[in-house]
Length: 556
Image (cartoon, rainbow, N blue to C red; front, side, top):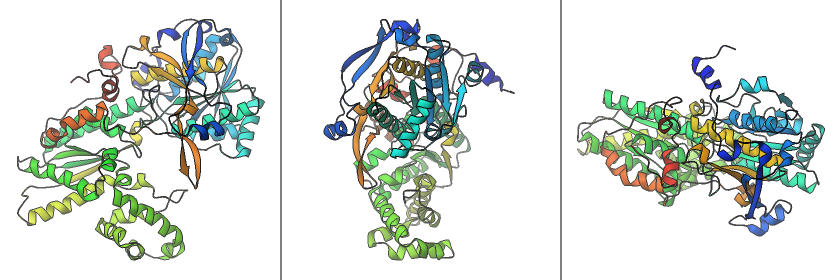
């Protein structure tokens, strides 16, 4: 295989482990703590998970664990969108298995959870594993978004597990994927099968975390990569001095990426969706925040700037949220008539005429291309495909319109030209940072110890992440303890609750304390590329979000 010089160098990188995982695997025991219960909906969750509710929290500690030496067959699943470090999770599981018993076998199920249902399986041996260590992507076995939810699917998954003589299944995924892992663990337990199910917290969005899960893997690498690109654009903006750059960032439900990138780069404007919702900010108020920065900077002769816009911003603006809900119903009801119309203009007029007065006014105020995007094909659940809406372009175009009004009134004399960007898929398969490479390897190794100990229904947990890796603490969190009940498709469903940006948290407070100065300043911060080689304080540094949350100083 023809590798780049960096890929060849990364193969040689040896991920760091917590001290507890550096010795013999049969001397690492799973110490049980108190029962962990969810914050809400306890009785409903107890009824939904009678076998796996109220499990104890787990901390790995020194002690005998002869079970780790037994011969095991373990299946691994990559689920959902890729995140940097997934391959190192698999490497951690593989190395733990082989350290316990060289005869143990690791199977990868191709294409996500559907691979378990359909028994699309491949064995991962040492030669294959070595080709993927410390690399990005999920291409070792591929991923998928199949949900195991019907009785037939659960039965098929169990049949596969028994056919392959699996002792454990490890699901590497986000909140929905690990909700699936919890359901699978409950099903196996209800059937009396001693097949352990463990989860691993993955998502670049950073919204799978709590007191026991300090961050999801991939967030570190993705936010550092986006911050590099944003920093480059900040420097270009200050060099050319003629463009405002509007940058959309991944993060539909939570704005952890946008907040982290703002802390790293100091843009002139950055929106946090959770704040917009909390303040019930209108679309006009959002635009006015941009306009205020543009006008103030123009008065200094600086007709350039950078604004960060979260992917899901429009879902948090009250009148826009109401418009999308009304559109979903309208287009479902009049689908045939809508699709029979010939052009985009006719379709927009058809929609406008059938909307209620308030939503029609919002719809009419939108640029034509954005209005058409709102009317585009729905997702499988009949909802607007928010990721396809050019939110950054919407904000830029509406700011442009407002600035023209101010110029006509003699209140603005600057020049406003803009560029738009979307940073999303670029960050999902990057070479993992040293932090993510180490963290993921530790998560995988921990998942093996949990499975070898016969523990099912747990999410692998590695904590104390602002300390050196040797001081990290490994253990497991009961999956059900992270859940609540949500209304989905007309019924209550158990789901792992997404962690949104906390407006009273240290990262947001740090941002809020400086954004007024950043709005008029050109004192951008340029983080540069991810550093893989050099001193630990440069290469192993966690995100500003994690450092601030844990009370450590962010630094310069």
